[in-house]
Length: 185
Image (cartoon, rainbow, N blue to C red; front, side, top):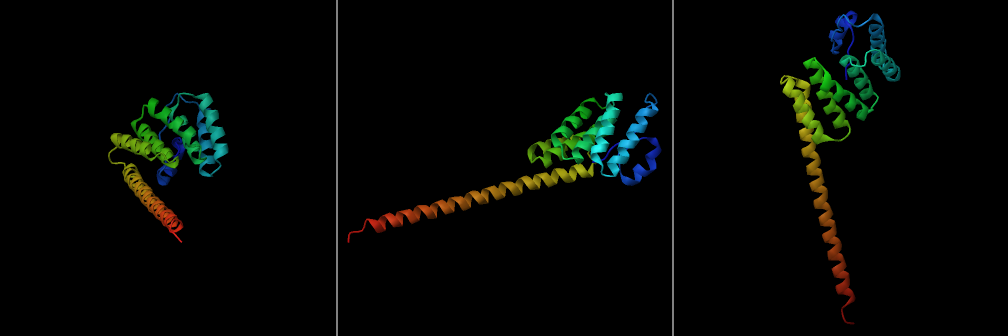
C-alpha cells in the first residue's frame, strides 16, 4: 500500500513508486505538515503514529480524498482490513481523480483477498482494470486470485473424494464384521 504525500517529496516519491497527488492551493500549511509527518511515520513503519496523524489531518479536512486514502492505506498496513475497505470505498465513491479511484478499487481487492473473500476480490480487480486496463498489478492479482480459486476448488474436490473413499472403506469393514458375527458355529 502506498500513501500520498505532498509536493516537496515528489522526487523521493517517484523513486519509491509511491502515489503522488499534489494538494490544491486551498489547503493550508497545517494540513501539509500533518500529511508529511504522517507519511514519515508510515515510511518508518510506525503505523499507529501515522494513523493518528492522518486522522488529525482528516479532522481538519474531512472531505479530502487524499487524506482518506492515506488513512485507509494505514489501516491496511495495520491489518485492519475491514476499516481499510470502508476507507477505500469512500475514496472510490468521492474521488475526483481517476487514478486515486482506480487505486482504491485495486486496494479493496487486496483487502478482500487478505480476508479470504476471493470472489469479491476478483470483482474489485476487474473494476480497477476498467479504469486502467494497463495496470499490471491488477492484471497479475486478478490472474493470481483466479488460480487460487481453482486450486482451492481442486483441493476441496480431492478432500471430498478422500472422505468418500474413507466412508466406503468403513462401511465395507462394518459389513464384513457383521457377516463374521452372523456365521453359524
